[in-house]
Image (cartoon, rainbow, N blue to C red; front, side):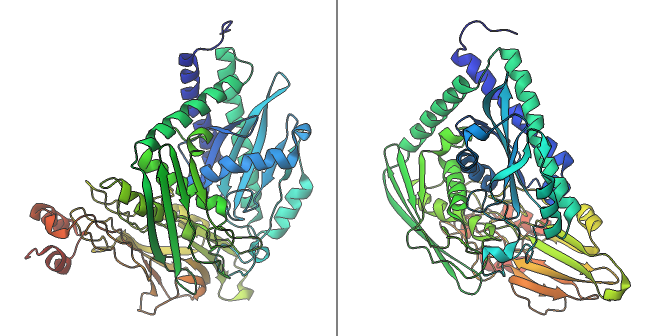
Length: 552
């Protein structure tokens, strides 16, 4: 199809819709070719198309807000660091710099320039969490980023189609699972290539030689729609505060929203200072999740791109725990980062009542397991296992919370079978945790209980990176808090919620994940709903009586 006239707004809208299919195929390629279970099973990734200026035009629906929205910033860093004069066909760029990428070393971002007829027209970019990057391993115990693993600066993974074997050798020499990690690097590059093939076919069909006009249309349309949505929110200054566990001391997360007309500013002044452990968050990741929470509530129907993200002005004082400075340790930045939407939504609730949910478990209960032979002389191989697990979400104004569901990250739970396949562990139990959802007119979502044991011949170390163990997800408008999380052995021995710990052969680790807060007074929940919850095992007899006044 050859087009002789300039594209109309309808043409641009059709092409915009097609771009979603392009980036979805890009993401699907990554899932199908990835080596790490965190990518192929949980979908811990992002994929997107960017114009020549580094503005994100479209993102795949598959993926996490932390990756996607941080990647929306990171491509501009690639353009600046590499230089337009050094960008050639067949090049592929790479980094895992936490401050220029997506917040920690375990995320590899790959950027590939797209050319048409020898002319540079844009970029494809993708990010994925790799199972290992060396150092201490995926956990919060480091005191500097240098301890957390290999940092790859923005550089070329491939130049004119030739992969840098020196870089591959450096990566292989610094990680515990070299085949998986290097395999994922090639998977990321293949993902971008798949997106480019689909884009070229689309551009040929519509008869366009570049993306400039389409990109301008997307940015202008999305920005205008987002500004109009912000203008519907009542003006004012709204502040909110939330205490979370931290590592060795509680952390205060504070935000002030200032809304006036089409402008919205979120400022995290007053938030606690940096930790000496790896729970710190680079500001790029804070912005990513703050934008996500606000956009979900204010402009959920507007597609996610640079145009729709720019109206949200997010700032945090440099040196606070949500704007960590180099060389702070940041390995588990997701623990606090995933709690950022709860903070901003708490402030927004004051301006938009009956819109946002109660607080949820929010932070993933990731667990990194390093399986080691009980007898080093046995010759049994080492293994690295990563599991993603989720507690309950907060109740919504008109609906119960979702159980064992990842919000705000959106990642999937890895299947037990896939997890056991990659390492010598047995998952003996994985079920919903009765009574963990906060009581309310709408009940909070349930957490889950998981029990894991090393197989014969093995012990395992696990890196705990869990929150909501000391500070529960709070209810909203009279709703009660969700249950606290617990980390223990099945014999009742309590374990720490943060840091590296040993589980010996014959011991069984039990994780009891937190539940989401309730919404509205429990007394307003119908007796029929309480009876249904009891019959389903969602609440206990004691909870039915004490929280809902229901006589069993």
